[in-house]
Length: 118
Picture 1: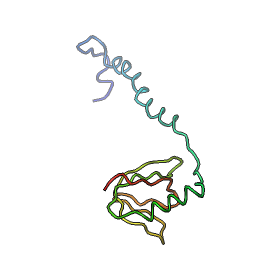
Picture 2: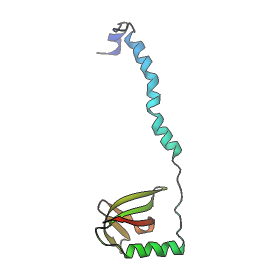
Picture 3: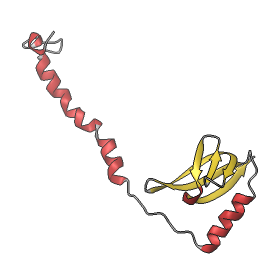
């Protein structure tokens, strides 16, 4: 059935079907609002260069990790800093990656690593 087949027919509320569609079309713009606001609020940041002391502390923390440790890792990706929790698996020095159960994070993008449990 096409839209013309419904033209001129009134529904239970007495409004023609074509007019009813116009009533609800104004809500369509509202459905895009949250996505627009999220894009508008997102501000990219640059990669922060760690101080020598902070880099040494991060290195000490990485050396002391034991497979199975539950970590909270803050890292840089796509113009923002993200924090992820997960079980530590290993560090791959040739490929410069820290492996969690569900992620492989570049060592150069790490900002902070904390042990939060076993």
